[in-house]
Amino acid sequence: MILILAPNTERQSDEFRQLMAYLDNLPNIKTRLHEESGAQQSLTEVYLIGDTATLSIEDMEALPAVERAVKVSQEYRVLGRHRDDQRSTHFDYNGVRFGQDNLNVFAGLCAVSTPEHVESMLRALQAQGQVCTRMGAYKPRTSPYAFQGHGKACLPYVFELAGKYGIKVIAMEVTHESHVEEIHSALEQTGNPTGVMLQIGTRNTQNFELLKFAGRQQQFPVLLKRGFGITLEESLNAAEYLASEGNRRVVFGLRGMKTNMGDPHRNFVDFSHVPVVKRLTRMPVCIDPSHSVGTRDRGPDGILDVFQVTAQGVVAGANMILVDFHPEPGKALVDGPQALRLDELEYFLEDVRLARETYEARVKLASLNEISEVNE
Ligand code: PEP
Ligand code: MN
Image 1 (cartoon, rainbow, N blue to C red):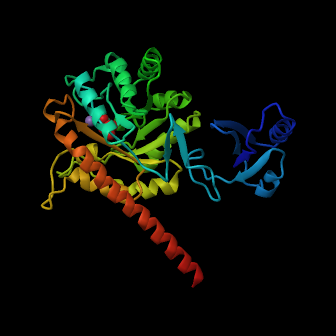
Image 2: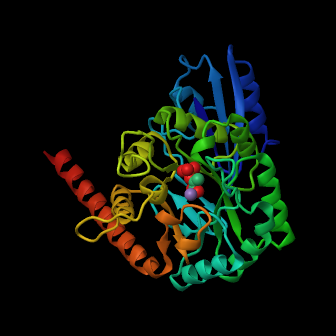
Image 3: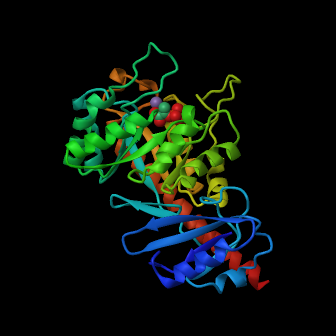
């Protein structure tokens, strides 16, 4: 069970002390506190763990400082959607909203190649009014002999250029906790010109120590990608690791599954799970069409498969798109064959806009039909 306390309840207040004294006396029940500090108010939630079956919602809601009580299932306690659970499905980071009700595009370089490429990319994004990007500095590669990313050496110029072009959030993969520290120091060194969303990639979805570390730090939100060869439930539990350690600013990323059955795409596209993740949890859902499809193949109608699956994800309600672009895909150090070109950025964004408009129209249509069902 979760007790949601009245906004701005102070831990020193009499109500809070009375509440905790009462809870501490309940047999076989442990408590765990979660604090969420927003710009306007701070929210405290008390998690009751153990023998909670006999507790009634009414009794709990009558306790001092408690605004609401929610019964939770065992699964995804912090990030899950529970019955009668009206906790928020969004968070703000560096002026950008990440929610189940909006959409952000993170177009950018799979791997940072040169400062010139970074600058061309960011200039193109600014020209299209974009404030988010992806920039890989630490690349987990299948072969130990492949380029591993420029690492911390590229961070200062990436961050400075991001500031110059008004970029507010960069999705950047980390594979080790030292990378988080390097990102933190480089941001400090450059005067925090931008923000970073830590990306935990599909190869590390169940790297529990990395998850715990990224969960304990509160500075950066995290994009956790689904594991390519594990169940959805296992990946959602991995996300819960982040939240259970204290970081709830988590976006869940779909990036296709390995099937190894001679598929036309690099991975089997799993964007039909966008609504599933939104139903099971309160996380915004990201789609990665580039790593799902992995090619620039197009259909007889002339539409690239990367565009097709993006539209499919957006029409289904995706909240974030992570997509590879490169000013010179032939010179990309990683994943050039799947990268879109800068002259395709405007077209891509327009295609996304059409899909999003369709999604919003479909939500309206669904709500109208819900009303007519009630009236029957
Ligand atoms: C990436 O986004 O650059 C990446 C390596 O993705 P994934 O972890 O999905 O393979
Ligand atoms: Mn890649």
